[in-house]
Image (tube, rainbow over the protein chains, first blue to last red):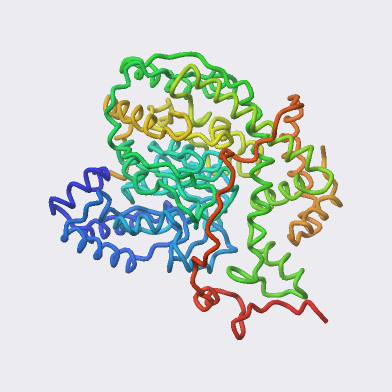
Length: 484
Length: 95
């Protein structure tokens, strides 16, 4: 059963080969057995099993959603009523959410069973899962390595078969990079496609929730439930949601794939380059055509992002003040001291750094030089994509410049850590959909992810291309040793 | 550009973060390095470029001015650090 995809489990549930309760038990046992991976922050077996029981009743009545009864792990950034929701932070260590994120509501309505809340970089600020207050997550391919971040717990859980699929969020690569480093299929939808309501905010103009799964088909099934207009999110886009599974098998003959030369230059590990080139060759065999495109402002994406994301974060995280929920410092003299000590004790080093960078960039006298300048660059970066898409339908390249790195290797050097998102960040700045799919293995035996970037609101095309590739290859079926 | 310890202390105060003298030295160093990365932005001329605040520039929606949420004060206050008579308690701010 642990080898089955979500699509296969859905069929098995309907054929009564297994019940939702049995499935939930099976994965809960594995979560416990492999708890050294530290993939989960909160597991609540009673709550999970009671959801599974309710889903079994719905299945017996003939539920019509393919996800009814399927257990899914939730990134601990999504508020779920009655579940502790920490966002990887000490400041929310005692926070039991009093309401559901829209994504959680939608999953509940579909009868999806929540397996628990997965570990993550604190407030999604990180690319290695090392900034979590709840400890680093180990990469199932090699426990000395990071799983990527910030959705590192979700990725580790899915590749280790502790969950058939999981949710993630992606502000600068936090779905795609861990998917790449763990050999999974991760999709960051277009900005506005998936509601951000109840998804704890990091950088509101960049954040998007999306699925982390093993196959494009599974990602399509999850996106079918997650996507859609939500009046509770002021940036949600009121566009109909197609059935993403319907276009998976469309012929990709004649698909024009744009290869940006900036994604194949300095900084890209030659081993990763080799794998990406052979993946592109496979797409050519499937009938796709390759065209050269250029994204001349790519190198500016990181500096631009590290103004905009911290600026938005410094504002968003001002709500954590110890007054209404979450941690409050024990000793303080007055209100100001309560705020300052609560935040000093509650936030970790990386979160504090970003709050301070953002505060500085927005402070009087510096706004034009930093925030306004970054917003202008953001326009140039988005324009680069618009022009590139005149010549192609999908842009491809590496997701991450390297394979998974060692725990501790970059944790003392924020700038080195930031560079691991060099290929993913510009996609968030432009608001486009992006995907990472398993593309092969480097000589060190570690997985490499191929990134697919699509036109605004054209998730279908990405899922279609990814699915066709997965029909012709089996990289996505490889499992780390010891987790079979 | 490099930040002084004095600037770091000022930023920390604006951000409502208590930092020790020792931490201000460390932050001055790491924040300066991050600002060094950020200043690569200056390599590009952006004169006449319209700033982009958001990928979705269609503008914000209006909604009906109607009550859509119910009062859940008790539920929300159950997770508060300190409440009394339906009010959130914080240190005295007016003498």
